[in-house]
Image (cartoon, rainbow, N blue to C red; front, side, top):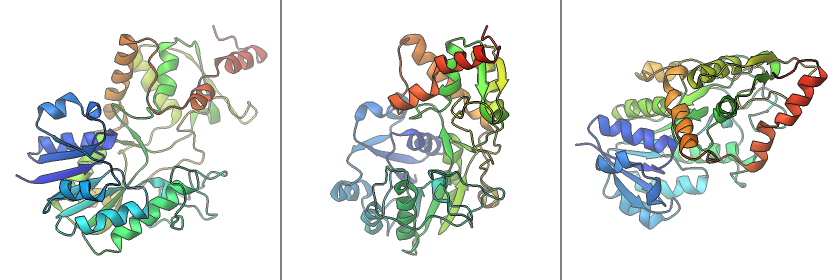
Length: 347
C-alpha cells in the first residue's frame, strides 16, 4: 500500500487530496492543529491525523518518517518553510507543493494583488513571468506571491522530484472563504435584483479542490521536477456563475448588467477580472490530468454545504470572510439606492 503525507491536510485542498488518495487505495496521514477540522468521513476511513504545527521541524520529521511515496504540502508559504521541508523529502518518491497563480505578472509587472490589475495577453502558461522572490509578510498583497515564488525556487532548485501546482480561485465544500457565498447569500435573501459589474463578463479561472486532487494523483504516479497550472476545464464568467447558483438555489432575480458609468464598487463579484484571467492547463493534461468535472459539476457540493449550514443556523457566517469583506459584498442599501435613482425598482 502506497503511503502519503498531506501537510495542512485538514484544509480545503488537503481534504480533497486525502479523499482522492484513499479512494485509490493509499494509506494517508494528514497534519493539522485542530482535530475538530478533520472531517468525520476521513476519520472513519482510517486517515491518521498528526497534530503538529507546520513550522515544527521535529514534528514534521516524525510525520514524514523514513520516507513516503508522496508528500503534499498545502501549507508552504515561504522560503523558510520550504527549507524546513527540504531535508525531510530526500527519501520521498514524489513531492507536491501547492502554490498559486498569484505568482504571475503581466508585461507591466502587475499581479492579482497589485493596485493595478494584471492584463495578460491570453491564457497564462507556466512560462509566464513571475514576481521576484521575496521575504516579507506572506499574508500581505505584495508578500503573498513573492513568498510563494521564493518557496517554489527553494524546492525546485533542490533537484528533487518536486511538482509545484499553481491553482487559481479554489472552490469546494469547506472553502474558507467560499466565494460563491456572494451569490448564494443573495439568493437565500431572495434579492429581487442582481447587479453585475462589467456586464457580468469578468472572469477569474476557478480551481475545484477535487480537480486539484485529481492532478495530485497523476503527479504521484509520475514523479518529476515541474510546474503545472491546476484549474477547472472551463472558466465561466460572473454572469454564468450567478445563473448557475440561482438555478441550484431555486431563485430568480432581475439581472442588471452594469457598464462603466455605474458606481465603481457596485456589482463587483469575486470573479470580476477584465480582461479575464484564464490558466492554460495543457501541460497538466499532457501529463495525464483528467478533471473530475467542470465548474458546474464540481461547485454543487460547496453550494449545498452553505445552504445546509444556513438551514441549521440562520445566522451562520462562512469561514474566512472578514467583516469588511462582507460589508462590501452585501451593501444592499447602496444597490437599492442606485436602482431607485435609475428608476429600476428592485421589486
